[in-house]
Amino acid sequence: MPRRLRQILVHLPSRCGHDSTMEYLTSTDGVSSRQLSGFFAGWPSPPSPERHLALLRGSSHVVLARTDDEIIGFVTAISDGALAAYIPLLEVRREWQGQGVGGELLRRLLGQLEAFYMVDVVCDPALIPFYERFGMAPLAGLARRNRSALA
Ligand SMILES: CC(C)(COP(=O)(O)OP(=O)(O)OC[C@H]1O[C@@H](n2cnc3c(N)ncnc32)[C@H](O)[C@@H]1OP(=O)(O)O)[C@@H](O)C(=O)NCCC(=O)NCCS
Image 1 (cartoon, rainbow, N blue to C red):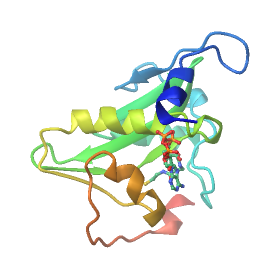
Image 2: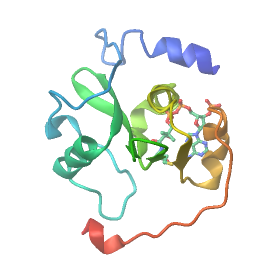
Image 3: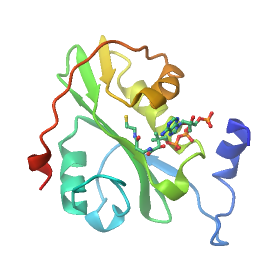
Image 4: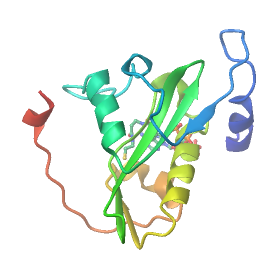
């Protein structure tokens, strides 16, 4: 299905038969951990919804996609407030993927980060084309992951 059509369909009545409109929030005000289920799919030790809320609150920038009072997608950035920002997490709940939500979250986050010199993300090679659509370009990078921090 063409991308634009999928984006339009997101605003039409949902599969549950009632009208559901997607809202994009730039703050965690009023968001509770109860609204944060179904994320970190495939992670060996997924963070709890409480830890999820804590990382959203601790991020310098956040965009959340909400529909029917549930958060169905989020993206975060951590910044030094002067030159640089890093995007550690972007996820759309599996049943909502492929409908333009991830792209919209990223577009809105990059809008918030427009003034920064550096905006970096680390991703799987398969996702490089997704980020390239937003003007990002591959660079070499290094990363360390401490699995025991998730336990
Ligand atoms: C990546 C992700 C956020 C995209 O969200 P989304 O709502 O499905 O994104 P959109 O509908 O705006 O865009 C979908 C595009 O992303 C691309 N894409 C999504 N997941 C992909 C994957 N695993 N591999 C390759 N491309 C992928 C598709 O090519 C698709 O392109 P199309 O529109 O031409 O079909 C979502 O797939 C997700 O949550 N994945 C699991 C977590 C993850 O990998 N996050 C990224 C961390 S760097």
